[in-house]
Image (cartoon, rainbow, N blue to C red; front, top):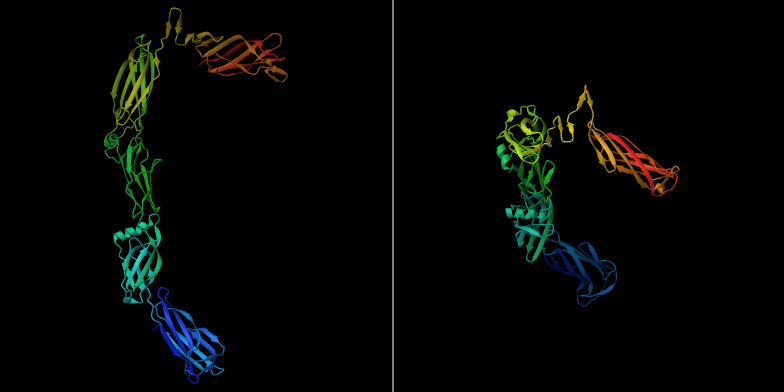
Length: 571
């Protein structure tokens, strides 16, 4: 091996050609550049004509000239440079041939030689790398032609940004290597993929020879394995009352509970939690801990997603007591006492929905209490009634309780207030006002029947109210019949509108003295002098009757007399 050399051709009468070369080497480029010269050589005192000069270096013709020159000793025929790339192992040989015609017109002198350049240092080559995940250890194969001649030999793993993260020393004469990552190195690799499950890494072999470094690299796919977030949810009742009744904090009482939850969600392998969802009965919460109150659904759905978009879902179904919410209504009536016409009796019935079964640790039962108050709000009678399920047989989760209380003043007004309570809740109800109605009563100026009056089996209707209000006279009959009269003057503008040959006032209305339950008939008549104005019914409702004034002349401020009669039912 050499960085210079020479050879000479055959000659003519002592004159021949001498080829010399000197090489410079580029290690990083793995190339050598040859500086060559072809000159005359031999006897000193003679010149010969030379032509047909030709030089071929490494298969390339670098000189081919037919010019004639006077060729003496040390006459430069040609020179130049030639760059030659080395083989992958750093070695390189090249051949040179030179020829010419000296003292002749045809080529008669030639020569050739083969030279071996100094070997260039080369880096190791990465041959193969297996795809790997964060739990296993990949293996590489490599080739290091310079063996122990290299200064250092390492393998490195870098991220997509070109930053080398992990370095390992290699056997200079070896051919394969299996990584054995530490826990810290695995976490370092995982940190490169916080927002996805795969990424591209670079694996490179770094060879150092003297001051030169050589790299041989390949890209590889790195995968996070078993990276889904963990989810270990729990649901439990934090309501002390319902927990006592069921004996189990993980049993739901339908419609009545405070079911707290903890998702216990955690990201894995360097990821972060990006969303949490907990659903129950159409309600949704997005925190790791929370509470659903008064739910009627025993299914809880948990879902968590991490920054790599991995999702884990779990569901919990808890036992549920099918509790029926407690309700209460009261219907009451009052009647004159059969034994004392100055007294009245109150009968009331309490009813509603009621859960009759066991919660698990305790069986539900019902308490009913009531108060009877007079018109002044004074409590006249009250009582608490302790009951059990034997008083309310059946499986329909309803109850009904009847009570009769006596000895009330028939002239006063009363209300019944009821409260019911089971082991969970309380419900209340109040009756309408109650007042006993005697068969008849009288005062200084009247005598009233409060029941239907019959003569020979035929019921006789009678007036219960009559009077005057807002220009109306009216009468109300016990059977519900009502009649009303109105008479008075009104001022209208008959020329306000024109239709079908008549001027008219447009619709005007007058309210009844009370609201009707039903209108059977209504009429309006009247008129005015001088302009032939007439009045007609336009419409009637439960609260008013409307009319229209027609005339043959456009008259403002016409004074019209109205006579109105309306009949119907007031109840």
